[in-house]
Length: 343
Image 1: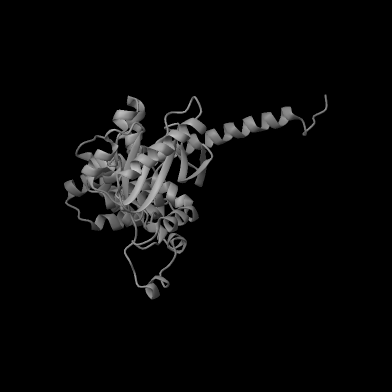
Image 2: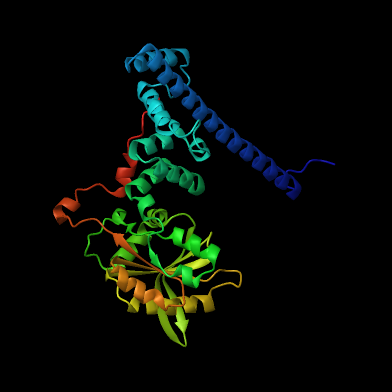
């Protein structure tokens, strides 16, 4: 039988081979990272031990860096700066662990360096390491999360999820939302109108999704609902892949008002009736507002039968218009970010 490259059998077989190669590449990358982390841990331990035994100061780092780079010219990571970072990283974890926890060993060295320069509490550092593994953050996303105090804000939204969702779903939903959300990347002033904020979010949809967190899939802006021949429009509609539910977001430019919860409860009923698949979980609502009174928000949600969260958002402080025009865009800033010296 002659070989025919156009056959479906060959293409299916080719795809299976490519998948095996990609899987092997991933395993090699993960394995290589684990070996690098183990090497850096042992090297830092040796440096500290030698400094203690021989009473050598930090000058040894410069000499060791020179000798290692001469001996291994094709291997990056032996700069004096990086050797110093290894030592600091070892000291950060070694008082509690004989070797770094699994999540720390799973993330790239650049992420580890960033964490120990920005985070001083070990528990918070481990939280970020685990989140990197779960959400696949690159280094820029990690830096943005730390800047926006992701650890402090995660799960801080006021919600009625415990009363309106079953246990596993309610816990995951609580952890999914945070307070406040930081929308300074939109470049809007504090007096921005709701539609301005909404349009800016869509224009910067990738950054907005990063700020919302992993799992959000964008469905639509000003999503139309028709109820008894009347038209209603949802500000933003998402589907959350882990929660397996629709998420309705309503934007409010000012302070939270109790009537907002009633309106969102109505929208959620419509979504559950018109869009929700039988296998989907109950739809969830999120009110994003400039300010909220904690007690007022809790009262507003107390007798609502749909799961709703209330969070605040932050915009940039007002700037003179002639000064604003001279500022670089988000894209320009991202393109000019300085990388850490790992060589």
